[in-house]
Length: 296
Length: 199
Image (cartoon, rainbow over the protein chains, first blue to last red):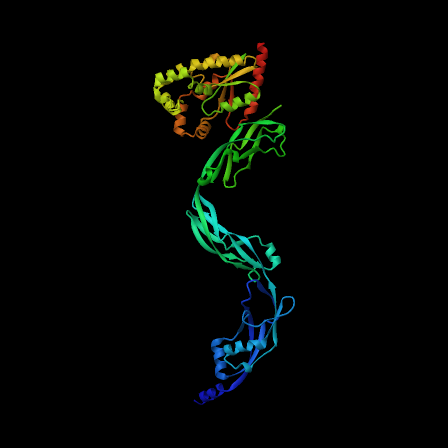
C-alpha cells in the first residue's frame, strides 16, 4: 500500500527527459527526392509528469519524428540545400508528446538536408514472363495496359532507363488467355518513382500447328555458279493459325552454307535458312543437305 | 541417236535423277507429265468419257485424278482400257519430241511404268532408279499428302525392284546414303562411250 502511494506521488512529479528521435521526412513534391540528410537523429528534451512519460514509454513508443515537408516551413539555401528550424517543430511535437510547447528543447537549432530535382519521361513497360504451356500452346501476344509509364529519376539515371520491367510472372501449363495485375520493378526504389506502379497484362495463348512450304534453294550468291539437287526443299515450321494466311514461301530464304567450303572437294552442301518471318519457330529442313553440280 | 529410258517405282526419285541429266544438257521427256496433259486433248477426252463416263472430268473440264485413280487401281480391265487410249497418243507425242532432239547426244524418256507396259524394247538403254520401299513410302506420303495405305495400293501395281533392276542396264541407288551425282556422271560417261563406239 505504501509502495503504491509512493508510486502515485512520484508519477505526479515533473521530470526532464531526452529522447533520441529518428527523423523521417515525407511528402516531398513528386519531382523532388532527398539526396542527403545531415541529421538523421534529433535529441528532443522536454519536461512532463510521470504519468505522461509512462504512457509514452509503454504505449506510444516514441521512436520517430515524422516531418511532413509539405506542412513545415523550409528555408531554401544554395545547391538544393534546405533547412528547417527545429523550434518550428515544437508545436507538432507538443501535440504528439502531450507537453507544453515551451517545455520542449532540441539538441540542434536546425535540420539540414539536400533535395535533388527529379526529371521524368515516359518509357515502355516490358513483361518479365516465366511461362510454361500445355502441349502445342504458346504465347501469341501479351498486351500491357498502360503500355508506357512515367518515370521520375535524377537526370543521369533517367537517361540510362529504356524500359521498366514488371515483377516476374510465373504461370504454368497455360492453355487459355490470362489477365493479371502486376507491379513494376523499380531499378532503384530510393531515387526512382514510377507512375502508375502497376499494370494490367493480358496474355493471349493460342494453339500452334506445324506448317510447311516448298522453298527453292537460293544459289544466286554462290560462286562459281552451282545447281543443287533437289533444287527446292521443304521448310517445316511451327506457327499460329492466325498468322499463316499472311505467309508465303517467299518469306523464307534457304541457301547452301558455302562458308569455308571448297566446292571442288565436297559432294554435298548443308542448307541453312537465312530469312524467315519472326513469328515462326522450330524451323527445320528436309532434306538438310543437297548434292550439287558446278556449272561451267 | 541413243534412246535411254529412266524408270523406277513410285517415290524412287526418278525426276531428280532426270534433273541432273538435264544439267548435262541431255533432253528429258517426262512421260507421266505428258500423259497427264493428254487428258486435255479433245480426242483423248472424248475417248475417256466414252469409256468411263462424264464423272472422270470435273465441271471445269479437267480430269478428276482422284476419280480416275480409283477406277484404274480397282479394276485391271480399266487400266488396260485407259492405256489403250493414252499410250498411242503418248507415243505419237514422244516421236514428235524425238524429232526435235535428234541432234542430241542421247535422249531420256522418264516413266514410272515401263516394264509393266512392255515398252523396254523401244529403248537402247534402261536406267533403273532404286530406293528402299520404306523411304519411297515416306517420300510419297509427304510429296502427295496422301495416306500410307493409298501409296501402298499404288505400289502394288508396280513390279518388284529386283525384277526391274535385273532387266535394266544401269541402276542408280537413291537411298539418301549414296551420292546421286557421281552415279549419274558415271552412267553419262558410259553412254558417251557407247555413242562414240556406235558412230
